Length: 101
Picture (cartoon, rainbow, N blue to C red):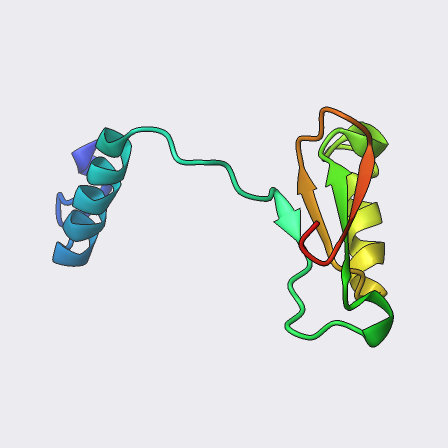
């Protein structure tokens, strides 16, 4: 932007909080890549007894990916409170885990 568009001549100002956040981000980037976590998962803190020991893992490309039906499917799973995670699966479109296995 041109400085003339602002009455004060200030287009933006970085606060101390913003500087601290920038330093934190810089340190994170310098530390190298971070292990990828789930792309999406059930946000509920409690799970029905029916699903208590089962977690459904869904490949992120399922349903055509995020641009198509994946989010609709995840929304439906959340409505039913089905424990799920979305990750890259190389062996199948869906994998079910029982307990920690």
